Length: 378
Image (tube, rainbow, N blue to C red):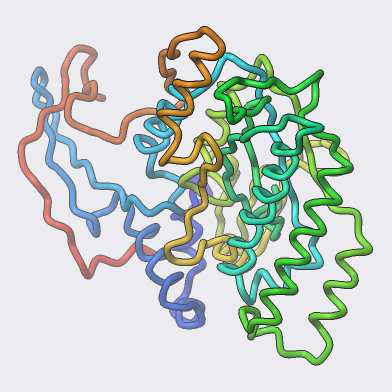
């Protein structure tokens, strides 16, 4: 592959996902790879377009719409951001991040669907208990949570991003705002989170949900180690940045691990991409052998059917409309106009400006059927 070729995840898959490596993948990951390699290629079919002014012809291939694809889902991401922006309240917001210790990475590899589910449950159970405590807020919290499983270098780093309005809805229908510039004490949150998660893991192990953990005594050892560790909970007041946090979460609701913008090059041996070192805060460029890049990327493919974006409390899908209206009435404020993320663009081709002339628009001339046996070049 020439070094001048665009550096994309698709290019890396085409270059390094050999038949032997593909055979080592489970069926779900093979399907994801097929989607990503076929995205915006003849494999997906498309449209034949023509400019209404200069007659310029152009082929436009469909996207794969896979939630793991870094070049799809911009329209869905924009819609999600608009919906969340429409539900924003005129109150202080908090961005919280709950991180699992790397001690659990082995269990995540064996039982991702179990660990991810328990992570959501533990985080919401922790925040719900703090919110209902009459010594704190004494009411119902709301939370939007997005699961991330990766770090900047594509290693396994499982954490939950949470956007939480700074207050609670009481049983009487009144809004009780959080005091000061923090929602709850971070140290108390981390201890409650640790205890809740370890308890859920112990229950799951006792009832056979972690059946792939087979080494004698491993469950007891790991849980004891976890209780001795300090768990990380990050909390930040985002009073003046709530829309930017919504936009940030939106970009990762349907993409995983890395975007094409961070890739520097894909050559015959390796993939280079930009990353930020957590400890130093400095930006750098990391070079990985092609097969290692593929391994790390596919490590973050989500279990089939897992919902990685969830809403809780008065922001749950069943309660949101009525509870948001009640809170706004209590605050004496009306609904806010939705704001889209300006960085995202539409996936639709017809109506786009013509690339060959300054005034023309592309019009649909015909459909291109998918080529099911199409294979990527290389």
